[in-house]
Length: 201
Image 1: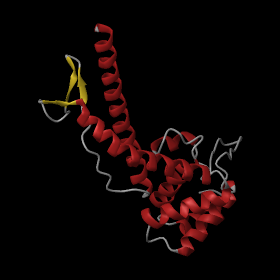
Image 2 (image 1 turned 30 degrees about the vertical axis):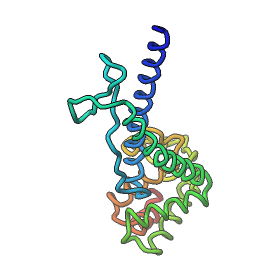
Image 3 (image 1 turned 90 degrees about the vertical axis):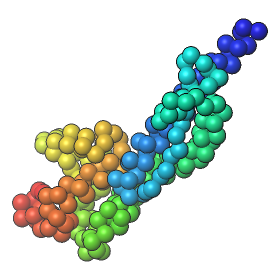
């Protein structure tokens, strides 16, 4: 009988841990999509955590009163579909951007939402600029200078500001590169004009 209660308590603790991890994943993924404009206005209900003094009850992070753990399970079920959808979309974007053509498509999607004032001419300038720099190859690396990725960040570690996965994630590289162009030159066409003058940007 004691073994059964212990096992049930452990299961409830594990469920609560999974609920907490899912909430953390939703927050991280949502922040990533908000940067690229792929997803906005995600509302995540509270996920309860297990009260270590009473495994049959849980404590809401925003309240001091205990609530049944089953309530957190309903929350997890509701959140789970959204989490899976976001993770799936993120994976598809990353996979698509690993090819040159796919990376250009992902860049157009990000531009349409994050830089809506950049018209088709600006997109064309960006294509020319990054074709010259890397041929839109996220693995492109200049051994002499150390510049790396689609946008040829120099030093490559600058891309940490957008995401620490920049070495393997072309979407992170694209987001960083678009922000760099916007902050330093204003538009891709101005960046391209500078590149024509000095063979770098």
